[in-house]
Length: 179
Ligand SMILES: O=P(O)(O)OC[C@H]1O[C@H](OP(=O)(O)OP(=O)(O)O)[C@H](O)[C@@H]1O
Ligand SMILES: Nc1ncnc2[nH]cnc12
Image (cartoon, rainbow, N blue to C red; front, side, top):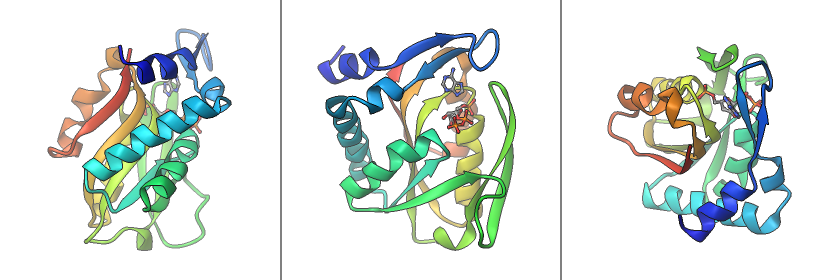
């Protein structure tokens, strides 16, 4: 394992049975509190934005915002929030989806994404892939192109990567860590 992966992994805390029995929650707050680890993570994700030729960075509420916003700044790109339903004031596109623990609906301002955009989606954890899949559907429905999906950690045993294959339509899924 490379040094950066060791550093990132060492700053993610496993919390058993949160938010419900049977879930091993990956808590990124120790990583966020460590400036060296947070900077290394931001640089790695900004590198993906540059390699994929992204022109905009989408962050998924809420933990995805924390990672995606500094990535957008570092890469010199605009940041677009994909929010849980009911939080955006303008005209939105909405998409419902299922989570490892429950279900939800996400929205984006329709005017934030256009046909000429290549969008990198950034999130902390890829679990079942439901959230990411819904975000990719939103991006395509807005007429924009998906440049890729970049996550800090992929929970491989939940099969999110296979689920996302159709929605990615050949765009890369890059996980800095896979467990
Ligand atoms: O691959 P999935 O099964 O869809 O799960 C992954 C999503 O779940 C978490 O978000 P959550 O909805 O818990 O919201 P939060 O970021 O507001 O805590 C995580 O930040 C991802 O967005
Ligand atoms: N096990 C998990 N840890 C952190 N975030 C998650 N989102 C969905 N499943 C998760």
